[in-house]
Image (cartoon, rainbow, N blue to C red; front, side, top):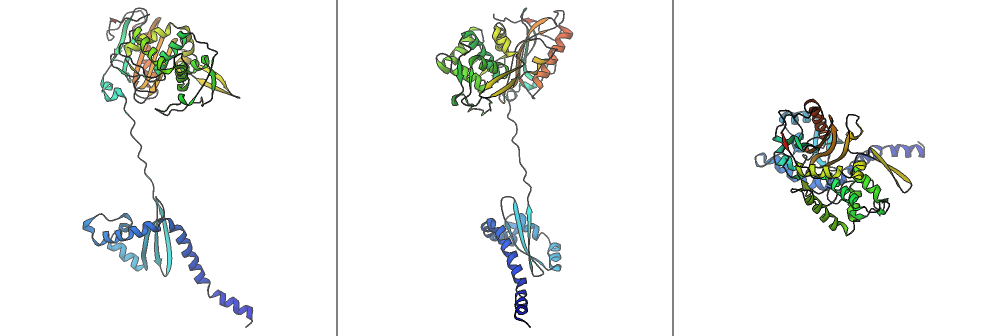
Length: 396
């Protein structure tokens, strides 16, 4: 036999051993992250099997030796569980010896994620949603007033004081408009304008520079939080002065249950009632700038070399069925979905307030219910039997 042939024969003798070594190295590499956990879990598993009455059996051990039938079956197949280790958070590997070979079985466990229950609004916590009404509104608070005659056509929990979210911006916009500050003055968004309370997003990044008029448009039409905050921050005297003027204006309008702490509505401490908000809507309607900007359907601004398109947050503005004079929407979890409007319905100028509505589109649906109801029952100025025939003084 030649020397080369002798070398090939000799090397072939070691092939099975090399294959076994390769398998062992692969298994060790995969199980290395869980090796430490395996050493700690193995004594616990053995103790649990030896003393079943003293504690629960780990899942891994229970599956490998859950019954005598399973043990008998493994004996017939010459199988023996060697060790069970975890190779990660959701990975379990089992090493078995079968017919003299080492077999590694890997199992990935499914992860069940539990979502947090939605936070209740202040109105829900107060039980206001239990109040029934003839229109079956989803808003826990509602008020419909004839702007000319001051007659209350519909009311529901109208004295309740609740967070008002971005309805706050209607007061912010009214004060900025009444101040007659230069609309073309450039204002830069700073870190102070970033929402640290709700951590809401904004397309107006820090460093964005727009005119006061542009910021006012975005605040009233698309409820831009950083725009509203920048308007208050740059008001003569600063943000603290602006907030004090907001509260002074509310008092002047007769809004006895209203309090403001900032100009955006992100804080749940900005609170009011439906009766107070009707007074605010009436005052805002008297301002031509607020009327025009709040009912604008869309608006574009140039930011650097980009053009950003913003849209109204109230889709009723674009509806041919509605003639809206002024409007504002709002939402934070504490306030629910909110909407205030002045609109002409069946020939009557109405002020509508909807607070703490449950559901993303429910405030719009509530407004539609009221419109159809007014068209059916109040078109001739005669109140229906189900409405409250009282007078409500609207300032202005």
